Amino acid sequence: MSEQKILKVHGLREDIREPVEAFGRKLSEDIGDNLRSLSLVGSSLTDDFRPGKSDINTVLVVGELNIDLLNVLAGLGKAMGKKRIKAPILMTPAYIEQSRDVFGIEFLDFQLIHQTILGPDPFEEMAFEKQHVRLQCERELKATLIRLRQGYIAAVNQTKMIQLLVASTASGLVPMLRSMLWLKGQERPRESKGVFERSAEVFSIEPGTLIKARQWRDKKGLAEKDEIISAFSSIYKTVEQLAELVDKLEV
Image (cartoon, rainbow, N blue to C red):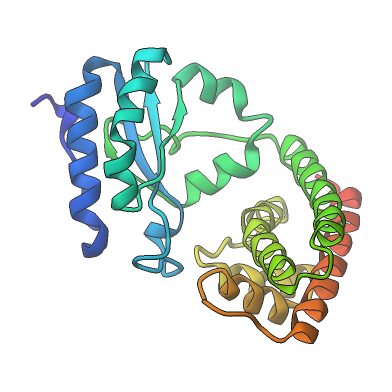
């Protein structure tokens, strides 16, 4: 096996090491020389991970994107799903280089929280322009406000749908807040609770509802209706506050 195809799974948590290693070996066998690198990203590398509930997310960098590759991955879909390995995010080296200016939030998160288990690390040396990241944060926050308004209306007072909307919004704010902390030259915690608490200090937002709503994503059952509506109102105001702040942020 060449050096590029050596699997580097040391340091991975025990409950994901076997399925990740099996996935990496299968990709190496089936994709061959088209495979450039495979990296784990996201919660499986942090204390936010919940075994049996959280997904294992990966970024697969290949030399060429084609229908044969998609068919290979589609054929692995059922087996991957049983192990909670989501379909990998597919990229080429050229795509990565050409997309830093539009996907800074995502790439900053990948750079902060990743482990490359096959091939060279595609994120370690990445650099970003602050004005590009600031603009994406503003765009994403204002789009979040639109989704919250539309989602609340579409829920037609169904508390379960509103709770899901609130929980998904809280989760989606984590990478945006990390990017805003990066813009301010602040430490970026790896776990969501730390992100909310640090953001509360830097941006004067209320962290308690965000922490609680983020936890709803991993728990069964509904909260009380008044609590859900209150959480929606609080998070909507927080997103408004952040959108105004980043709009005025000088970088």
